[in-house]
Length: 538
Image (cartoon, rainbow, N blue to C red):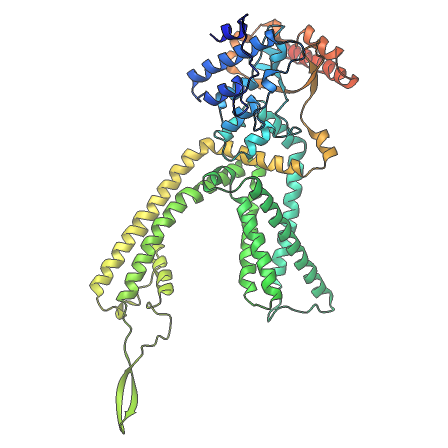
């Protein structure tokens, strides 16, 4: 039916027609596809069929069907990335046609194959960050995109991110880590050697006081930087509880650290001594934020992902139930507690009599709800004190409450928390690597955005420019990926046709583009030939 509509000689269907939202037929296929093998295979076949038929029937100079954007600025490839249609998304990135006339529609070119080893060139158009709303940015920063960690493991996204990390991101990340450690040591020294008394303190004309003042200025400026950076991150991706597990909560912790330090600065200049409490809280968050830099290591990064999962899921659920039991039983203990009466002597109508006065505790009593909550928490961790039982009016009721509280919290909840954490480690270990890769990808693109424009152009991935359509003489940037596929090694063994890139494609690479592109094509040809001969000899 589709073929008939496209080839109808009376009135052909125009594949560039759009609906009310600017979607073409390819956009519609992306929207309706499901992430199941059978449905993805059917829609992928229809997608390729429409694409090839349009290429055969289109007139010279007509726009490519796959490059048409809808009203929101998404091409079919970008829309598949936005909607998390991972099956069709992978098919579109790995699309390769062997027919010579359909070769320009390919997004993947096989250079050579020998056994399980094969080298491929992937089209970089719409993927690299030098374009607006690139596929990488959509997947990495799209908090609402399903299957984000899994999509980043699809080639060439995985190799592009690894290439960025190896070329510049790892060096910048290490430098940022060292700078943050220096800032943290200065912050700690400023908090430790702070002046005692009523703020603000005048700057004395001594070297040590000048040095302390410089340290305070550095810590405040650092807080301003972290505050602005966190606001920019929140504006781009508003934090949501459902996405904290994937993206982590390091931005929130940096925001709290910076906010507390800025509040502390305001209280200091207002002459409030309460600034000390805010200062030490900010210092604690500053040391916790060192964990953000665990992303630079794979093992430590996966460990950090497991910690985030336990905090956001297991520990959060435990605290919700435990807080109810803690407050409830503490209120019951306070209501049951009775102070020993105190009698004082007074002269009434010329007669000295004893009058019952207000009870007075020489130390904190269990009539105080805050003190009782703290003591009940000690019972939860096995450090409770029964020294207050003499002041309880109904001891049987008290012991019943205490035993019930210990059974529910110390025996039941804590052991349940330990069991859930063990289960979380077992489950998360299978997906923690993908989540760590996602968090590292966010860090890579964030660092790339801070680079100047002239330096970005030099750091973009891409190894060669290839002209697949000599009539239109358009060059496309490709990225080389060498992979291992043990599932097809027997079928590929001894297939000489695909070992070398092919004379026609190499001739097009060498004949088109500037001198630099031709030299890169020759280098690619020599690299593939040498690698193949080495594998054969081995």
